Image (cartoon, rainbow over all chains, first blue to last red; front, top):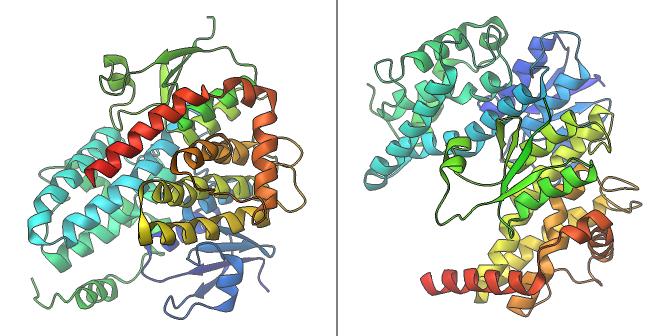
Length: 220
Length: 221
């Protein structure tokens, strides 16, 4: 059995986060694709509480929840490419923004794209507020982590890649270059990063999935 | 420069209490600034513009928000009485349980508190599911942190501090000792820890306040 295993899902941004982190640290791992409609006994054994992916298994010990896994990876393989900064205040700031993205942004963006017509305006307003917040946080930095990608960049992978595809599938435009030039530029830098681009799901496959699953058959 | 530690808080917030416990366990001197959440101070809005909530820790003028983020910061800044264990795997477990507290346990208990009839029965099923996992985790341990309280205990501590208040208000036991002996024992041990005991909000005042919140919710439903 490989020393490091990752139970994941090809189209999941949460699963992808872990792959990015492992790639950044140069960790070899075995990837196991889960079928969430038919969860494997191993997944249920390793994550009995949430029964979700991603789950990282290191030396037979399972860790669940992507943010928890990211910190574990950073502490365990700490010789190269730190995901979190060294200073406690900067670490707290990174954790704060990671939590903000996970608990507020992603849900708001998702709702803004998929809501019924009448709820969409309110959802879009909230989503745009959050995008503006991130635009302001980014300031003139190349990445949220500074010159190199860090925790916040990894957690923002939904904005960096998934959002554009969902926008294309639904026709909803949220993260535009005109409104959020810095964030837009960040998303381009993000997907071109070597540690990132090799771990992103195939764009066409994800687009087709989004369109099919949500019954959008019009091509734009 | 003398160290300046302030905590923007309210007397009844279980999230703020986590931070109070952490600071006291580490012997850190701090000033409490009581906020009126119906009339938020310019200081709060300046220090936490994103969420506009307490607790906010301000250390030498630098603000940190979100109670679990604050706990990590406190643990990394003041190294006496470590809240998190040393090894990465044990630290991940502590982080996992803290997240479980906020993502699962808290909403399920709140659900029982404000729901009625069949919805409440379903909410109870959810709580029992969550408590079973906590019961399992406590096997062979006095606290989630082992022999003494740690990060996970502080994150879950609101259960020990607050569930009895909720039970008193709704007149129903939520954590039954026969069903969850280890969780019950942990709750009793936790509030006996001197730092915890001395920081508990006044019981009757808390019951009155939370009863009022519940009535408002049920009235609005």
